[in-house]
Length: 595
Ligand code: ADP
Ligand code: MG
Image (cartoon, rainbow, N blue to C red; front, top):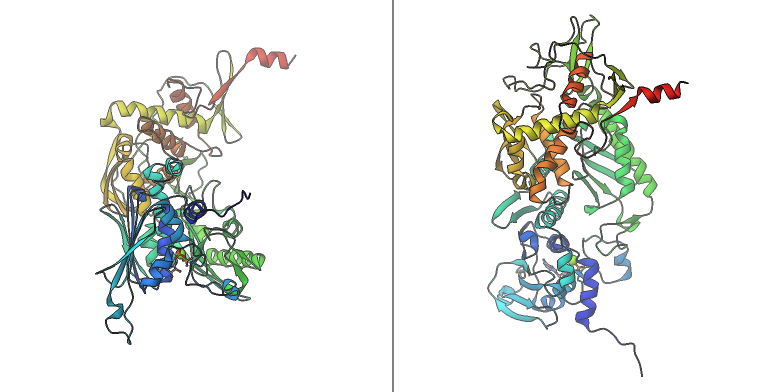
């Protein structure tokens, strides 16, 4: 008696679905790829509950005949390749013939389609067809009145696979994945119109345009001033696209898009090639923004190494690596980015309110990238000349990093290693980590302000509009209440624009966009945070971003103020994240070591 048998098709499909369909995003990706392959010039995507309830994709492509419609949900059925040699030169996004069969194994699927009428046929193909399928049941096909092209509705994803359904993340996270895929697709095909709705809310509607315009529309980047074109061809490999200036680098990889022959791919080595071109232009933990396409003869590329087709192998990866590295380096050099963002600006003629006045003859600088006070020197040499201040918010109420020290006698303070502050106490020597200490001070200030919100914010005389990507706007909307508590009064104007009306008092004028941007970046990758922990989370991140850094040189008064403010804190010895801010080296220990 034989124990081995062929699995029923339904079960085989459900197993195969595990590889192709992992989350709503995978469905969106496969359906949009099919629409692109069908030659659509307009593709509309609607998701409800991040796609868990409904994914609806409409295209105006070639459509399907009744027979093709019936075949489309059969596994290993494809119109895109026929022979082995086709497999070695794939020009379509799909070719495995698995997607629709896999989706139909784990959700209810409805496909409405009508062929593009050709010159010969009169009326025959002017009928549309609808296929309705439930997992495990034979699909049902009937005629229907519909428009040319195809629309697919995928409902109740994974309802028959509870284990999978449970595995899905929060709507916010799943939506972020969907949204990133929509960004990728929209960036890969600028000749196609993409309309994307989250329920009834329009996320974006982008018409055919240049890549630069598309980047602006989809990523919410002000492309003109922040992106540099990249273009180079050599040995049959071409690299083209845009890379972002260091000033728009992000705390995550959310702004990185790589395409191979127009197909979105992930490739660590190629992303690394771009990163290395930036050399020391970026601080650790920040990631450049880029949208780069590589064109290589499809015969030299193998896209069939992964069921989701986003990993690829190609013959001469090393050559591509070097070409990308050289192309991006050249682009950044030509853009002359160095002088544009290095260098510190002298503070405005009126010192910031409440800032400890620099010693006579001293000059205080503010790092114009971060707004941090980075230098306070006592020499009388004239300040170097700087380009004009970019910020136009001259009327913004100035903020204080440090409150002025009282005129009582101060303990001496010393800075060591540009990162520690040493000060004697009655029992020994205190060794303070300047960054960690400042984090604690800012955090407690924010938390206390939270109790008396009237002092939490400073209104901007001129509100500031900033653009961010639609998926980031979704996050801002989610955290609007917490931002408000922190002191950011924000209005979401549309799917890519936020208007800032007020900022927390710690934020330096002109830095509103930067500070908010950093917070959004870290929220994007913070995972799901329970509601009651959210404000604390944002306050912690805000403190980490606003605190003076290790390596910043501090003036005596700045250090004294910091130490004093630290010691006023409720929990002076720990950062908001629970790391130590200082330790005491007791005189006992000093004497035991020195005897
Ligand atoms: P693949 O894309 O790998 O061929 P799929 O399962 O995604 O496999 O689709 C199966 C077939 O169904 C495709 O080869 C194509 O012929 C047809 N098809 C799917 N979606 C569409 C669409 N939006 N418009 C026209 N034909 C489609
Ligand atoms: Mg496909």
